[in-house]
Image 1 (tube, helix red, strand yellow):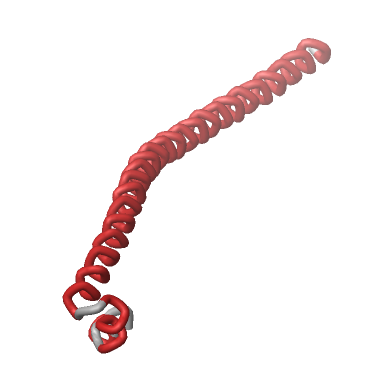
Image 2: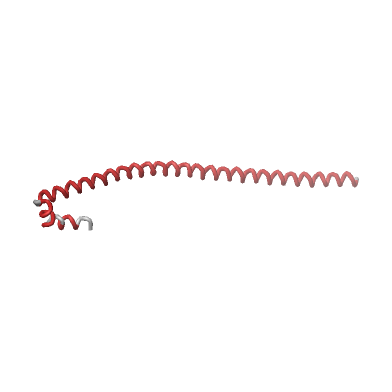
Length: 109
């Protein structure tokens, strides 16, 4: 674990190196605080990036929802036009048959 070395490093090694235990611990404290500050700055940068990405994702999801709605509307318009076309073709076939019957009757009579 990351904290296991804390108590072990405050032993004789730090005393011999720094001259007394308080100086060794103070040196470690300053170093740890500096490192914490670096990580704090990194965290704030990452948090701003995360917030920016969250906003972008929300905008893109809204745009995607709008595009899906437009796609469904376009399909509904296509379907309605197809139905109208089929009805018009059906009317054309019926009118052609009626014209053909009328011409046959006129040619026979």
